[in-house]
Amino acid sequence: MGFFGKRANDAPPEILNWRLWFGVFVFGLMGAARGLDEGLIGTTASQKSFSKLFGLKSTHLTKIEQANLLSNITSMVQLGSVLGAIVAFYFTDKIGRLWATRQLCVIWIIGIAIFVSASTNGSIGMVYTGRFIAGVGIGQTTVVAPTYLAEISPRFTRGLCVGMFSGAVYLGIMLGYFASWGCSIHVSNTNQLQWVLPNLMHIYFATIIFGLSFLAIESPRWLVKVGQHERATKNLSKLRGLAPDHWYIQSELMDIRDQLEREREATMGTSWLGPIRELVTIPRNSYCLFLSIFAQLLGQWSGANSITIYAPQYFELMGTTGQNEKLFATAVFGVVKFVSAMICALFLIDFIGRKRSLMTGISLQLIAMLYMALFLVIDQTVGNTNVEQSASQRSAAKGAIGMIYISGFGWAMGWNSIQYLINSEIYPLRLRAIGASIAMTFHFVNQYGNSKAVPEMFITLTTGGTMFFFSAVTLLGLGWVWFFLPELANKSLEAVDAVFELPWYLIGRKGKELTEGLGGAVENFGEAKAGIDAVEEVGEVEHKA
Image (cartoon, rainbow, N blue to C red; front, side):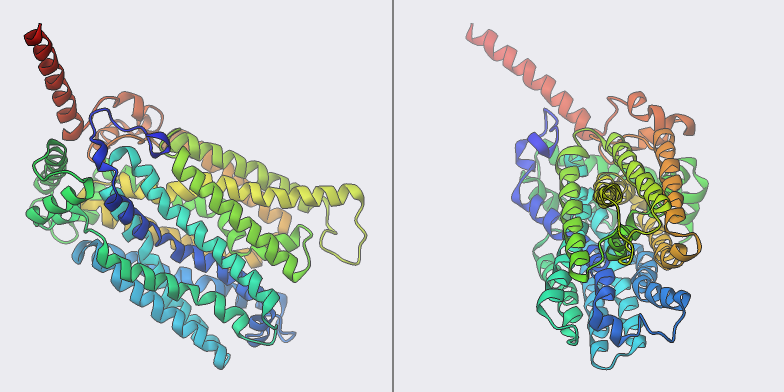
């Protein structure tokens, strides 16, 4: 199967077809929602037209007040995304994955329209309101899209399919960076279109996703959950390119129904609080919740997202001072993160495994963060145009700029891919949407705190101290992944259950080895069918003889 993963010997080749890839494209593209905001807001705030209109550099404000104003603007989408992630599980389960997508696109468009309208009157209130509303839509994408992608994907391409979402995050970041850089060159600093035009890309993407969603196929797993079994069979047949009575379709449906029946029997008679109680009180589920929450906590405070959002400021710290030069360096940074995210999705997540890919990415990020921390502590004059830098200082500064790119590669290879994939594959069907919703709520709470804190951390902790803090969190994350995170590559969503039935201290270190060979009906049916085929072939040979 090349870079699409290792296909099980018994899996029909028809299951990798255009309908599957179309669904992956549409829902993967939703990752651009978050990416566009992260790529645009930091560069938008650095545009002179925006900064002057909203007084980001006003002499009437202290340094702390300027930092707070900047952080309020940049973090408002994260605050809205907290609400979006909270309500996402309700819409995803209540109206389905497709209609949940359509309503979030409408909210996203309304929010951005209010935000860019602030260019006509300079209302900071419209900026806050528009970005908060847009965040409600954007926050839902992180639950709806990975859930759908995991549910429609064959098990051996699940990492690739969900990885398309995280890859699209960096497509949005890259496009946002380049749009801001281009407008800084070609649009006057006094013209508000300098920042309005790049931000209109939000509306373009939301409109495209909204339209294409009418051509996508609803998740068969959700249809089974709501009792639409005939439609579920029909949709799964389309997604796999096989007849409804094909053994692969029937065995996959058997897996889904069996898991759902077991879940319903275990929770029969519970109230609407039942799913939450299950998450907290059942050891198997509480371990999953622990993985989700700590993946967000350690990933968000490793510093990589702050570099993405405040990239121009980071490049200025490392000695890149010109406005266009900062934005160009930022745009190149976007290319690095996009390419590395796609390499991870296409080649690494399913090929070398989730855990090995994550640990490699975190290690690269740690090396880069430590270098930048040491550089900022040793060279206190970098970025000061009044101080002449020595040749060794200039070389060290170039190395620090290079480390920004390496940290981006490490993040895209590590935490960025896992933070979406893990939530989409560790929870049982009944709890998948609410588990992902809680995890992404925690994600945006931490991202909001990070966006708010970083400008002030640079002042109070100093830039070098801030980077040492991020380095310490990154090191802690490396140890956590080694001990607690299990390897789930090439396991069906239903077979993942076996890993989490192990004692908690074995799940992360021995989960894959101790559950090797355990699978659902698809794997078992496939093995049985392979045996039958072999017997039939022997019989034909003997008959001919």
